[in-house]
Length: 431
Image (cartoon, rainbow, N blue to C red):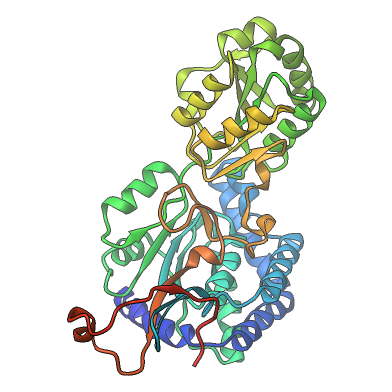
């Protein structure tokens, strides 16, 4: 089937899916969860083929870790689906209501975007998260995963499609693309596809933006920081920084650079080095850092590098202003955290750091749609459009204006026969 036909089918399905009620969509999600459990042995076997092939092809260790989809991962995605089922239906929610005049009421109501194309990396669990979020929000989805996960993605798509067909949802709402040629063809189909979400490097996201007229929700590199302020609790700072770096090093929300205030650097750096050494984390540092602890030098390019590995760059900064400037210069607008007991410093940091997520006294690894209670995520947006940070259900919705009248005509208002009242209403749209 040609990609144009695939996209057309997805468009047709999206119209039906937009009108599907919460009960039908939740039934589809329940069937998906059950079918994943039922077919877990087949899924794991397919994933084993991907892992074995990728090992032969010398796929990098962090990517191999992302690729693995075992029984624990299946249990995690099923838990995510059950969380999604328990969330209220996001479609048809009244965002605002205005009385334009007596008997003339305007409603701003949430609705699906339509057809979404998502290009994602080697994590098969992303396919399940993305497709179920799109289903709950009433969107059709075209999915292109990494070629290293092709066998796993293929069976997951089959399992999900079979489940939603059984539930009575429209066919064609989920389509799996298989080649780069498919992606290039998809980028041309702005008449059928409403949004593209590419998950990958800055260069990849820029390529998508440069080669399509479709709106793009960019999820680029995760250059995340922890800043240890001069008024930080050192023990807390060590605990948070270690978790932020190693809890899952291959994640985009893992901390890549640690900034340390020079007023506490002499005491704190040996402490954090000991903690990182015990976890086999390689440290590179600035000149000030290297005068305190024995580490390799950090070249300029490391300040904007996403390691996705057991490696971290450390820089000693003179004050909070330098920390903020460094983050806004080298960061990717993803997630940044300050560790301190000083609330004035927190206010300044949170106001001036230009990122989708800004934290106080906690690990950057909390930057995640599931952990935020958004029902997992399709990605993390570093853009400044309708969605920013972890993109869950809300980020997959747009809105429409619904005007309910009783015979009003514009001519009466133009000729001053009538005037607008523009009163805010505390009521939901209903017929």
